[in-house]
Length: 508
Image (cartoon, rainbow, N blue to C red; front, side, top):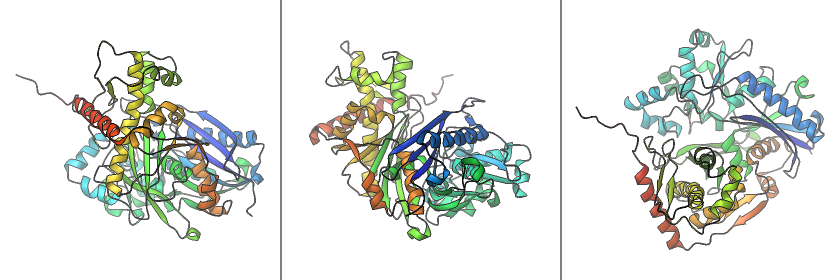
């Protein structure tokens, strides 16, 4: 059996860095978490200091080991999972970033993306990468850094700069610059990666004017890529698993069979379906992306996914708290919503930042419809929770249409998955059970799982799946006609929200 009784997962998120130590049963044995600063230099710009990301991640790794009562010799491997698409550019010689990291939320390249669409590149880019052309992804962010940081393009052409998403940055730091590597799941979120060839795409690099030499190598999601420098954590621990956060969460939920779906209920909601060994082109403008890849010893098998996102999930509950003031804490929403049996035909369409899939309407705006003099705070609270479940049900309908796979259950994680009423609403609207796992930290568990398989800590995905345990199962209670009527009414409400902020022609 492999040396070491634990695995260390580094979970680098958008607002905080965390580290978790897991044992062989997949239980958490030590946790540490630290927040870091968000930088907003201009409207629509979001940046992180990559050096602060590294310092907080290293501190949490050391803290998690301490809290677990473990040392380096107890750790079989390190797994990394990360906020996706966030773009870091640094000097190879010094490891110093040439600018702040551009966060996935950053919209500064929106005009560039619009020009790509106007110039007729959107369809072939989506066919090649599985992604819609959007400022969300790393490719245009990297192009912006090369064009706007003084001297960056010339330095990159000379081979002096390295680009990476956050996983790449952490691996570089952990190995003292010995490893410049990403995995397929993160590469597939750059808009520079051919989803079928599983490599960087030279035609896209030419279009965006990005020199190939700045890019990292692409390694399997599960496989040893290097070793941490001994002075960092007390030993040369192998780095053996890497995946973007939503793919890692899907792996952590043991969604190993085509058709299995997980939904993460956080600020937004991310729903991912395993579609098997070949990508599925979406007709509903979902994203087709890489889930994870195995090492050559695991036969290098690729698992592809369909992904859909809800922009406003738990953030809608925060709006009730901060915007309307009808609750003082987010965890009060369930009790308030439970004061009424239904919404009394009130619907909230939380299009505060537009609508994503399947509507993709940036001009949609938040809309509350169906109110009467009898509408209360409780009705609005219930409509808010139901809006999260309704949006997610729409995504699942798209996934079923695109994949041809019928759902048998939905695995739920994320902070809002703790809300029993929301989980029951979701089951009722889907018509299939919603299952909440005992370990809600699916993202970190997935990174640990990928690393553990690579070093023989676990022997197979079947063994890993055996450690996955349900904490509660929510069975659907609604008949089919009630579900369908509710979804039809929701679609009516959505139509009222669409196009509201579209620029209006002014009369002379």
